[in-house]
Length: 271
Image (cartoon, rainbow, N blue to C red; front, side, top):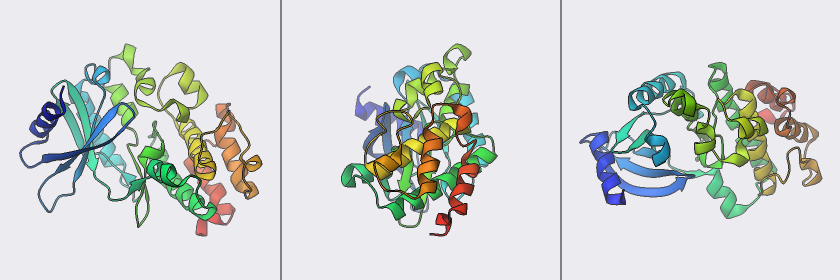
């Protein structure tokens, strides 16, 4: 489908009050558009799923899952979904457009981050994930593109979307949705190998990869690479990263609240 046709289909699905204004940098195989509505409403970011996933998704089930997520993800550090639907052959979901930059863009432009800023971003990401994990929601696709840096705070977007897509797929395809939508470098080894639903320990592996990127500007070369051999770090931060990145799920932090407690006990949580 040509861009003009896709934009027209999206405008038809969003309704008469929204106009698709521009396309922005994609995230993986998903295309992103910004839609503008009435002055009192925020701009929407519209994320279009890849064609091969869209064709298999039950649109009604996906819309219902998005509504449930939106109700359960009310937290200052989370950007919940606004809705979604089908636009021709494609399925999409929406959230409010956030004015700022992504962690991915920051790292591409600047490389490694100052330690103090790393700890600030880590703390805010863990706060967002802790809220989701308490509600039995795993992010499932945590990567720098889904960490948004604004003047006021750090936000996490697209929490729970991968599992919502999985629940809207036929059972024989649901287990492979993570492979189709997620960036392999951020998936825990067991999920990368076997697929399946995301969980808090999988999210914690992704936190470890993010932490490594923020501290070095690069992905870990191997699972379990010791960060304190690459950069001088406080012992508590090196241990947090080591536990996140271990290949054995049971050895990782069980959820974000447990890792956040370690940040708080270190004294860094008040920075």
